[in-house]
Image 1 (cartoon, rainbow, N blue to C red):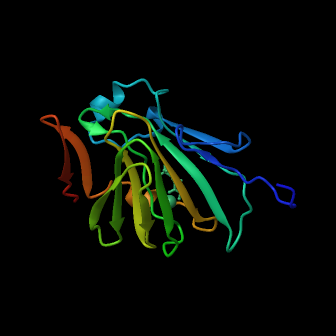
Image 2: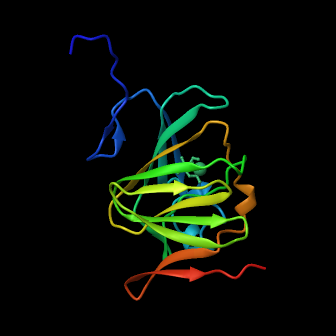
Length: 187
Ligand code: F6R
Ligand code: ZN
């Protein structure tokens, strides 16, 4: 092409990775996820340095109106009978939403509103998930390969992990060879 233009970053669909190599990377290991999985003994039995998920982010401007783009790669596996998952969060600025897009692997997106009502969406390559404002979100890998999902969210959104320190209202486990969602009674 001989018109002035630039080459934007891309996603390699087979690997679910950004094509650009100069992004920001953060690995979350089993030892970082204290209190996230309900079976504490099973969690303690896994070496603390075992990677559970990794987030790659593009370097983008920050401020009102700007957007972050990131890909989460969540390993397959379980802690006891509970599938590997991200920590999960509300946005610090609760009204800010987000879009997730399934790239690779299969799993569930757990969504929960401020009233504690939870629901699950199936995530697979090509699935599009609109996460409204005021909605906490967590990825769960129920498959046997890495689950990769691209996310776009306002850079001003921030993360509030503390609001869900007691956990979500649903846990996804393997029971009798099947994927099951169990309601959790808090309190
Ligand atoms: C950003 C977002 C994702 C997650 C990522 C890791 O708002 O939702 O990029 O940050 O999937 O999950 P957490 O942040 O819950 O550890
Ligand atoms: Zn988010």
